[in-house]
Length: 270
Image 1 (tube, rainbow, N blue to C red):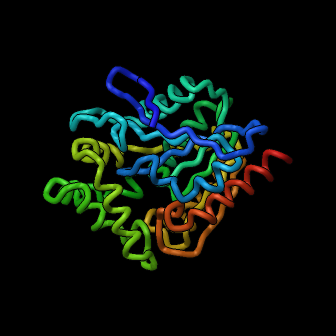
Image 2 (cartoon, rainbow, N blue to C red):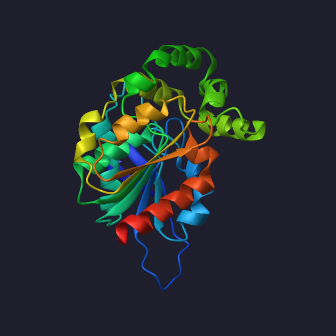
Image 3 (tube, one colour):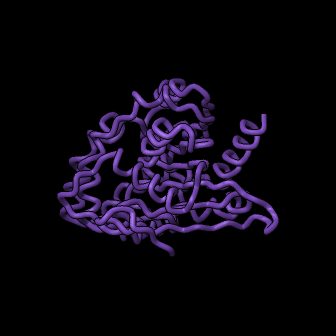
């Protein structure tokens, strides 16, 4: 995987792939993974998305093969979106579509709000807008478990809520191992910061077409609660998928990829 020096404390690894016809000029798409994941989290969506777009999949600061962060690192939403803009600049991307999953969704929403000229469309897959509302009550127990048992054990413990009651056990174990690669210092520091995430004030400033996808049994918020903040985004559409996972991009990759492609074609060709 290539890497970019974003700041003195961050070498960001990323994947840059496109399977479109050689004579075409595909637009760029930036895919942002969730907590304790890496660019690998998007593998299942790549056959469809890569056929139509140049897809950039960064390993977020601290995660995957990017530089791990010290326990005392001061996490912030603004720092993370600045990382993504710096990566786009280094690749010469004037504009791009954005897809995000789980806790990357509020990062993507602020990115779209703060850089309206650069984000062509936005797909929010199983997202949150307030870490305190969606995660806050669980953060203390999560931190305690990680400190005592490690990141992989925490991922395995929380996986039924993440991937839902119908998920195949082999898939759950595979995701636990993927997430378990996250450095301990990164994970402890990042989870401590999650309750402080709140992008509600950014939602009315998102001007690009936005697709918000959730499941009808998501543990991150009821359909009514998600619809309430989705309606604050001016050019947004809402899609509800049957199921009780909250990582809808992982449990329904083909459906999400198809929905993203259909949404972009419909909204940007109108």
